[in-house]
Image: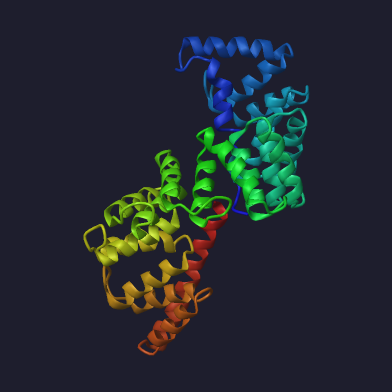
Length: 371
C-alpha cells in the first residue's frame, strides 16, 4: 500500500478550533484569551481545549508549548474528544522533533472511541505504519473505515487503497473505485489521484488516460506534488493529452519546487536533453543534485556523469566517483561506471573519493531521518 497520509492535530484542526476567535492579534483577541482562560480555570473542558490551542498558536498570548500541553491534558482527562485528539498530536509532533508515538496512539484511541473521525483516521495511520502500536493492516483499515463511514474524505481514499492493494482488506478493485469516487466527490486530492491511477492502470475501470489526466489535473491544481508529477508524465508521453514537453516541464517544475524527487530528476533530464526547456547542463545539474541529495539513485548516476564529463560543472573525478559509489548500492551500472572511472584516477584520488562518499552518505541519511 502506498504510504498513507496523516492529519496534523497541531495544524488544520487547531486552526479550526481557533476560527471563533478574532483573526488579528488585537485587544479583542487578548480579551477573548482572558475570557477563555477564566472559563478554563473553572473547569470548562471546551475552554481548556481552546486555551491550549491559543497557547499553541501564540494568539492573544505568547506561544507556550508546555502551557498548551497542560491545558489540552486537562480537557482530555475530562474526556473531551477534541482535546484528546490535540494531545495525541502534541505527542506525535512534539517540539524539537521528538515523537512519543505510544502516548500519541493512546490519546488518539480515546478520541477515536468517541467517534472523533480525525482521531480514527490518525489511529488507522499508526496501525498501518507501526507507530506506537504493532503494525496491523486490518486494524488500521478498521479505523479508517470508521472515519470513512462518517464521510471523512481522506479516510475514504485510504479504505479504497486497502481494497486496491489487498492490504487489510480483500483485493477488490470495484470496491476500491467506489471509495475513491466518494473521496474524489468531496474534492479530496488523494481520492482524485487514486482514481486517476486506476484509470491509468485499468483496474476496476476501463483504462482511459484522458480520464486519468482529468483527475490528476484536479489534484494538481490543488498543489498536490504527486499529481503534478503524474500529469507531467502524461504530457511527456502524450497519454490522454497531446504530447507537449513544455507542459510536461511546467508540471514537473511545480512538483520539483515542492521537493518531489522524481520530478526533480525528470526536470533535470529535460534540461539535459533540451526538451520543453532550453538545453542547460548547469540547470540540469541543479535539479539532479536536489534529487540526488534525497537518495535518488538515477539522479546520483546522472550527477556523476556530469562531473566526469565536466558538463554544467567543473570536471571532477573525485566527486563523480563519490556519486557513482552512492548509487552503486542499488544500481549495478553505477558500480560498473565507477570502476571504469577509477582506472583514470590516482590512488590518492580514490581514497579522497571514498572519504567524500561517506560524507555525502551521512548528509543524505541525516536528511532522510529528519523527514
